[in-house]
Length: 186
Image 1 (cartoon, rainbow, N blue to C red):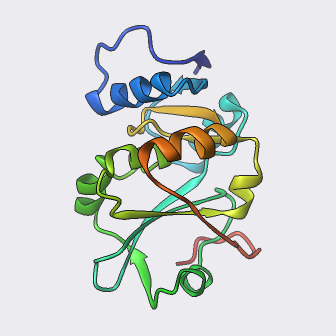
Image 2 (image 1 turned 90 degrees about the vertical axis):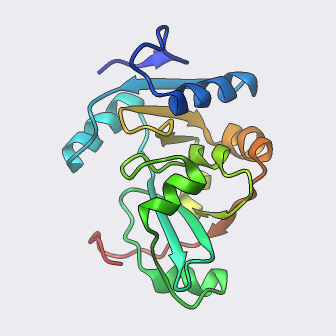
């Protein structure tokens, strides 16, 4: 894996949804670094990608309420444990669970394994509420996928908050993420 500045020189073999990401980031004059890779299947794969980018890629969870009427994208540090009770209190939701992939594709034009804040560019009806863990906001850079899981980007957090989110019409809700021993609990 190598680290590149900006978009790929050649769009051959790339999905349209990925190229639309680069078009938008370039239009917004957001600088970004990119690495191309095989889909990450293990934590070791993720750690290699993180090392190339020099960031910790966020854990991005696509969630919904029990009625499947309210949808959420939660960005949290990859090393944090997610427990629904910690988030539901903060957003006044009685119960959260993982949303079906059909909603992910419908609202964000993303398939499982590629969930990312960048997918909000496809949520023109604002069906998905963005939740960001406080440590993510406090970091200098955000690592994320460009709507595909075969590339990863490094973007300044300030550019995401001050340029990208306003351009795509989303306002984040900052949530506290308590410290737990690292285990993947829902």
